[in-house]
Image 1 (cartoon, rainbow, N blue to C red):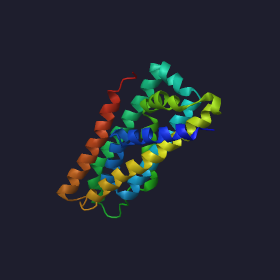
Image 2: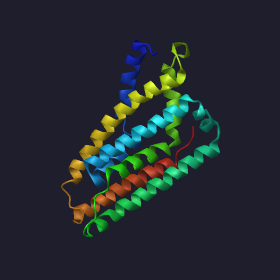
Image 3: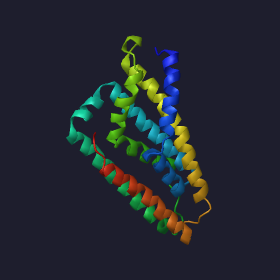
Length: 208
């Protein structure tokens, strides 16, 4: 379906994009600092799953709707802002909850959902996909949606590995800090600051 030469051209371009520090990478770092390695990897997987949804929507042509409807763009954007602020508040409360006996760590399933929704409520992702992926799509080579999904899978796998490694690095730092210690309190504040910063970034985001 896809010319191997075109695919080989796409892979390094996708890798370069994955290596560029951005909101997804910072989110996984925050999850690693806050909840550890498993949650960081789960968050990275959730981000990749959300990215695949964006790719599918772009392949179906629905991304063009978001691109031409500022109202829909803003609705999605503000949902993302609200969710990131909710995560920031949760990070601030984490040391107090950890001090209570019998409090389990944040499960990986919740981190996966968080990563999925954070990515899905960032309308800039689908606009990015619309700007980047079509450069490599050849309609004569086969179904456009299939090509979008293949390229999206390359982006998703690369993003999962790179963002996951960043999250694991964050978990290695956070593992040595007791949640109820002074350092642990600052760890919660740093994590909350990351999430709040991402919320501010999304709030100030412009469609073009």
